[in-house]
Length: 304
Image (cartoon, rainbow, N blue to C red; front, side, top):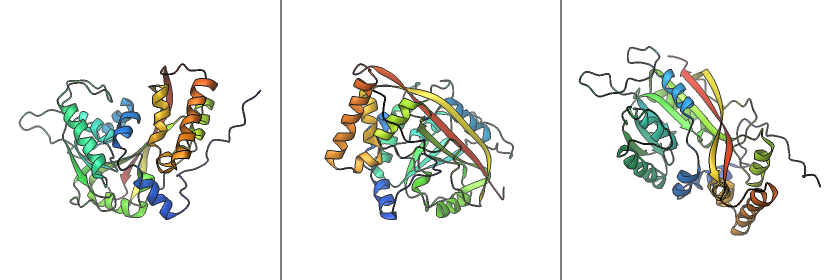
């Protein structure tokens, strides 16, 4: 018996929320989910971090990776403002690369997870999320409970503003104006997404079962304000090794599942259990490489 047809891959540039109230409800769903989110959502590939750092201006205005180190007279570290930072997945990787990072998020509980992870990272030479050269010093991390639309940060105070997995939760016009205000001349805006690689049929069906909302068309382009011009787009395909139990639990980090009724939530988890263990035939607890794609959009200010 053949499998039922899987609907075509999404043609969306952004998720659909139905109503403004539904958008607010889903956006608030992640508060209190910091532990699961931090444990189950992947970080970003080293090549993507390399591209972001290579786009940063040097302090004389030329492009180039920031100079790490702390000898007297050394150039100051680049300042990155990570908006919608959540548990600090990207914030921590940027700090690991030597940047001074301000992680901004409206959720205090999510930021506390980021602070705890930074304390652990800075006391260890190893960072499993980003196995960079251990000789590179850890930068700083501070957190700020605020919205992307109104950070309260000084004008022209950031070399980089990053937004990972969060641009679609913002008011684009207001956030764009705020980012333009806090970026220094020559600064960079980096928008990036990890998404399930639904070009692979089994991953596509998995995403449909868990109601993953962040699945876009292959050539999607995020809405952006007139303040910015696209400088470069980079796409990377890679795998995140996870046990089958973790792939089931990954659904618990999705806004649809978080806000679902207990009955619907258990149905989704049971369907994933059936799909991974019975339909695909993976042994319970075995390791599976989950295919992802990372889309990075690097923008520069139009008036730079």
